[in-house]
Amino acid sequence: MPILDGCGFNELNAYAVYPQTRHLSRRVRIFIDFLVQRFEGTPYWDELDLSEPR
Image (cartoon, rainbow, N blue to C red; front, side, top):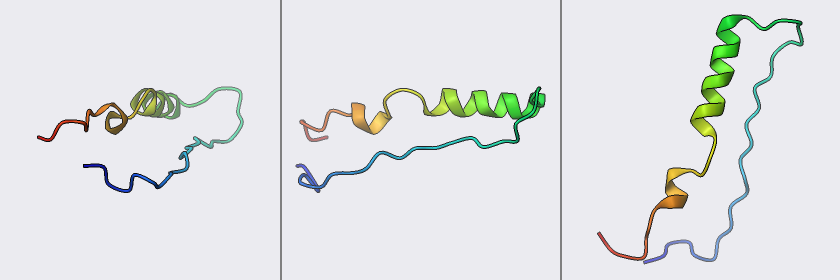
C-alpha cells in the first residue's frame, strides 16, 4: 500500500566543512572517511521491496 505516492522529495546534501590547511589532523580525516563510507550508495529505504505486504 503506497503512502504519499504523489509526493516528491528533494535530495539532501551533506558537506564536511573544515579549515583549509596543508594537512588535516588524523581525527578529522578519519571522521570524513567515516561519513563518506556511512552515507555513500543507495539508502536502505530505497532498496526495500514494498510490493508485498509483510
